[in-house]
Image (cartoon, rainbow, N blue to C red; front, side):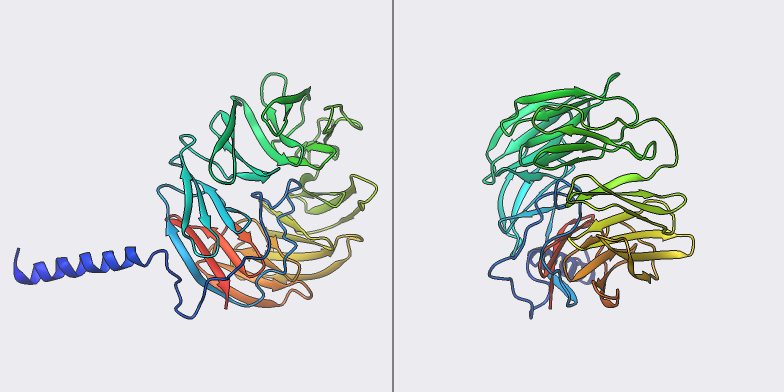
Length: 378
């Protein structure tokens, strides 16, 4: 090797080495790790109702890199519990990181591919290929059960629920120790989107009917009338504070239906489009879609359905909208836009920050093709 080529080679190695050594450090020398992290995001959609909303304010100031860490395989959406970040990978690892610093706390290898974990009743529910495992927060495996035809999954305070997809679809309820509590047969129409509260379990009927399956969480008994086969009905997306929110994607429309006495009922016309998403806080429902006139976010009063504001975006929405009590974050193909709760004014945009987003008070966690990142408000 010639001296010039040797110098070039050594310079390249040095650059790669430095990059690798700094991968887990804060990306800005002025950004410090927080002493504590306010708030949690214990499930992929925050809760068993799939609200995609935290009770924390959210980062109203622009964010920048806090830390990043590489993963061996694509990472799932991370969840955050007690300042610890948990995620799975396609190469079969379940990892726990310090949410403030990104330092590894433990890692386990429960299966060939590990989906996003769920946290409830002081344990992690880990969906695997044909199995469901439970881990303690310190990484100890507690139990494992076979779920060979599992389609759809939700974890809640009473345990976990999934649909065994066979000739006769069956909803299976597991206690927190993995023992079967009940099995209830359902029928078409149904879709693998499940919702749960302390006393009820809901299974979406998709776009086939305005009704959905409702079961008693203790006994598995069916409640109310079953859905009927049809077409072009709103699809259930979110259950929050007794209200089920459903969206008709093709023609455009939101149906809010009172699932309990605490819920509310209303409907509103909205632009239709593929893959709409909603996020529900205690007082606001956010709807995001790539409509025929372009990407748009619309905020509604959760109780009355009154439109509060709408905001058009420059880039196509690409992923699930998430919200805090003070702001809403909308991921697009190249950036994430943060809008105010009141009025929808833009607070900041962050290029390179894309879905999925896990939100706390002033930190956003996300995954990339290379690993997991944390960004914090400046």
